[in-house]
Image (cartoon, rainbow over all chains, first blue to last red; front, side, top):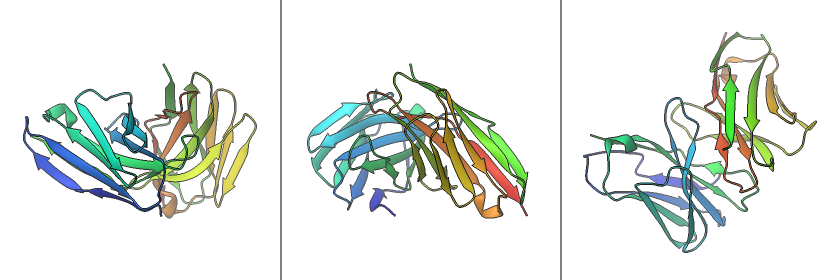
Length: 112
Length: 109
């Protein structure tokens, strides 16, 4: 299995609070991605990174920010969480953008 | 806008009963198509990459095929351990994947 660790695995928080999810990889892959998965929807790309300090937006980036200060870590921040951001969040990595992405086991986030 | 539709949404099979899952797509230039398997509470696990129409890939009881508008995942003589949700994802020109919502397969012994 690809060495991807997401933390925390579960989190419950309140509307309006900031939340940061972490993705850590041990594969030294260049590309890292954040997705959300909701019932009835496919995985939707939030943001991705193509190197340290290099990030770009995905399909559903509003309300989210990311940072990558080291190759191995990619952080996803919800500046002020809303109930619509309740979801399961997945991190993925790939060595190049054309190659298959490998996923972590997700963070289940509930915003009350 | 890229669109990926998987059908059926759910599929219940008897052990040994072969079937096929469909992934149809409209995309701005297809660089490739990925198939994944996802178990409950886990992240998607990569199965196959297909790059061009006519290509086929096989792994155990699974075979994936690709045409210009759709891909099929054939499950031959499935076993209960093949129960999972199967996801397809298209790779468009900008390399930002579009995923289908998945087909949940349940195989009964």
